[in-house]
Image 1 (cartoon, one colour):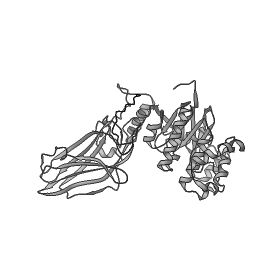
Image 2 (cartoon, one colour):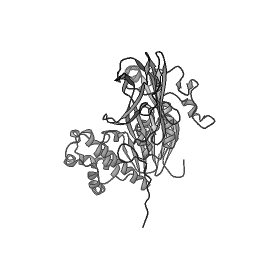
Image 3 (cartoon, one colour):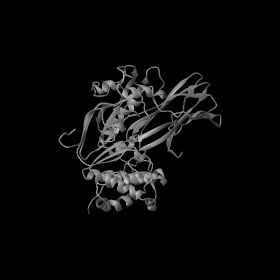
Image 4 (tube, one colour):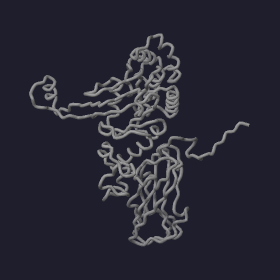
Length: 436
């Protein structure tokens, strides 16, 4: 990364917490009594270093406990590091968590002036920005009511409006947008784009990988307080997906070791179809309350989603190939069994799907004791978002349609996209604009 123009530089930052089993041990340690160490050391951050270039939107991702929120609080001065340094070049505005910096007893207007004062602005300067803040928040007369009466949606609207309209050079956002409605989120992301055009810097922490892919120029991946890797969103998100299903040697990645093709090192026990001795489904996030039924003539004993690289995952990239696979054991002779899949949105609307009968691939007979694997490979053209996948094995017993085994909403399927169009899917329009 370019060192001559950075907005934030984090150098060897460590944050260690002392974990005590008893309050008595905490008191003795505070007064320095006794030589025995009475605590365990927990490192929320461990010698973390990275730069955030000016004018970029940088995402920070990782599992819960990776240290994402901790480093943001250190950058904004809420926490003090145990060791290491943070260098900031520019005025920071932060939206770290719901309620931070707001007095619950004050009205919305009073909190606007309170936050402006905390950032070093005079009353006159806040007066100039007030109308922009109120227009962006769009909560009407509630600005004159104590914020303790606000819904979480109204609260986040006002908090974000203050943070983003106070004219910062660096904006820090930690998951806060997940509270607002979709229309407000869209307005916030549009503001992100304006920030980028103005050469301002955004540091963005989120579990929403679609938003990370769409809005970030650069992504930093953390794991247990350490930087695993950093780079363009697609590459780092792919690495993160592999870590989530325990398919990458994290220590090897941190050491900078890759295979001959420059890919992260797989664990020794890793096979192409998953971890040795485990089912495909064990590497996916499966619905624990899946709705299943059937007459038992056949059973879906395993299933998988694989991305364009053959990786088992719940997350696929828009415009890339992916596969849906089911393994079925048959307990009686069945002619022309039908394998199916359906993708629905979170409201339960079926958006896409097919089966081996529609694809004219079901003209075979399964004997008792047979096992078949069916693979549907296709390009993902749905918009970025989270969907639900259902799979089944059905057929006809004479003239009667029969469900042998069906799994409704068995797994979630997240689509990562850096470009979405209107509606459910992308028609991939070839656009030409010509001046006559």
